[in-house]
Image (cartoon, rainbow, N blue to C red; front, side, top):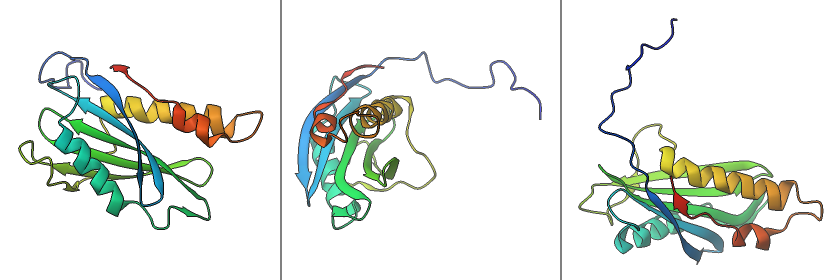
Length: 162
């Protein structure tokens, strides 16, 4: 297989940074979740999408929250994207794995989230949050000389433009 041809990626337009904001902690069915928001058109996603994303987490996350290899800790990303509404529900499983369920809805119906058809795991903006969460887990849980500090992990959050 040869190298990709220059210009083989068709862009809809130039990259426009999007604001990523930490929306707070939510406790849902025994899970403590960091909630993030991303929006293509505004500084924050619509409140309806954030609420629908947290609601999706309430029925998408494993029950019980705390079980063998599960700590009841995760994060949710509500993304008001250019073409669709997305909700990513992620949780820590085992000592070093992120598990995820991805939901989508039409732009005009942010409350109609359903499991996303396809194999996507996230876009460049959502993956910035996932990368931050990975690094925070390493710092506060896996590589903490004093042992896992779940409170420090939960208090670490990302906000910025990507």
